[in-house]
Structure formats: structure tokens, C-alpha cells
Image (cartoon, rainbow, N blue to C red; front, side, top):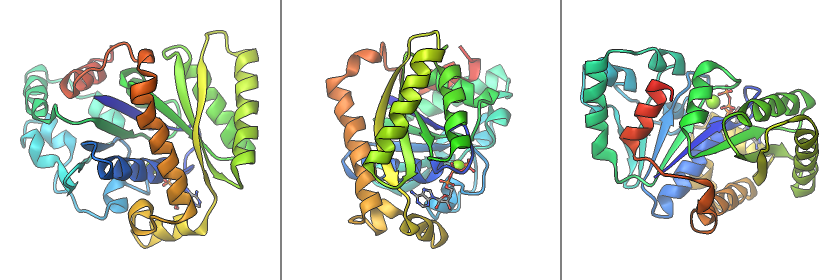
Length: 268
Ligand SMILES: Nc1ncnc2c1ncn2[C@@H]1O[C@H](COP(=O)(O)OP(=O)(O)OP(=O)(O)O)[C@@H](O)[C@H]1O
Ligand SMILES: [Mg+2]
């Protein structure tokens, strides 16, 4: 199972939008996918996916409901795990309840992907999600402040990862995405001591359609499937799934979902 943490240095760069659309497309391609909303922000996954969860993962950890009751089915292959702020989840330390939590989660072992939508910045919870992930995607937009913040995120991540994916969002075109990626790669090579492999996973152009979709609570990849930004997200997903077969070696071991949450909560 792959655990894909989607993160960014600066806020509002499109993490939640991209996470939801990646997760949706994976589900359409036949991968059993869960999206874990590990952030409380303006664009929560429940809003993007237009569902109203009754519970969150914290209710499960408190022992109030079994894990499967917090999970919201979006379609046959796509499930939402509603979160709380990462800090609240990670500070939860009741061993006995946690054991039950891990047991409940084992039912979900047959998933192919867990897409984790985190908050912005290098907070403690985001660090833990990066550590526990098999794949990390850093999203940035072209503005210089966002690029600087993405660079800081890469610098931090280089301490714990040897490979990171980048997604350039809200770019004019492919050329701009490639230029920004090359700049980031150069700066990283010069100024980051640890070896870190960066790969441009893809880009999404700046498009009013994306914003309109957020406002109308539709899902771009479903409701505007043939639009250019939706096709660009489809390219990202294709590259991600191709790497499953082509480039498995950067993943030393792929844990199951219970092991993932154990690692996350014990912050190994
Ligand atoms: N390619 C794009 N073109 C135009 N608008 C976009 C694009 N990508 C995202 N947006 C818009 O940017 C806004 C922020 O997106 P989103 O909520 O996904 O960002 P985020 O990184 O998850 O934010 P936060 O850090 O608050 O969690 C939304 O209104 C979304 O519609
Ligand atoms: Mg978000």
C-alpha cells in the first residue's frame, strides 16, 4: 500500500484540491483509495467531496466509535477518513485505546493508496506525516514566497527522505513549470547537504475552472473531466501509478495501514 503525503511550504497553493482530484482519479482507475484529511483549513475535504461526515478519526481514537464508522464512502473505490488538526491526533496517547484503533483499522488493509492532505508548513504533525509516508509530494505555485517556502520544506525533508515529488500548480504552461523546477533543483543541489532526489511529478495550469469548481463544490476530475487542468492532474496520477511498477526500489518496504498509523502515532 502506498501512503502519499501531500504537503506545501506556503498555504493555499492547492494541496486539498490536488489531493481530492488525485484520489478520485486513482479510484476511477480501479485503485482502492482513501483520502485522509489531516488538516483543518478552509477547503476541507468534506467540503470538496461534498459529504457531511458525522465523526472524525479523533472520535475513533477516543474509543467512541469503531474505525469503520468514521469512514465515508464516496464511491466504490474511494473513501474519506475525516481528520482533525494533525496536532490533536498526534497528541493522543492512550495506549489501550490506540491498540483498539489499530485493530479496527486492519479491516482496511486491502487499500492501494492512502492520500494524506496535510496543512501547510513544517509543523510537527506535517513532519510526522512526511516521515511515515512512502511518497511525499510538495506542491508549490510560481510566486517567489511560495517557492522559498517549498525550498525550506525540501531542505527539511532531505533529512528524512531521499526522494521527493514536486507538483507545480497555477503555472502558465509546462515551460514555466519546468523552469521553476530546474531553479529549485539547482538551489537544492548547491545548498542542501543531504542527497535528495527531486522529481517533477507534474503541473496544473492556473485556471478559473479550478476555482469555480471549488466554489460550486464540484470535483474537477469528475465534473470537468475533459478540461485541461483535469487532464493535467490525470497526467500526475499516471506518473504516480507508473512509478509503482517502474521505480519501486525507492520504497524499501510498504507497510499496511495499521503499521502506517502506528509509525505515525509513535513518531518513529
Ligand atoms: N490550478 C488552479 N487554478 C486556479 N485556482 C486554483 C488552482 N489550484 C487551486 N486553486 C484555488 O486555490 C484555492 C486554494 O486551494 P486549496 O484549498 O486546494 O489549497 P490548500 O493548499 O489546500 O490550502 P490550505 O493551505 O489552506 O490547506 C482554492 O480556491 C482553489 O480553487
Ligand atoms: Mg488544504
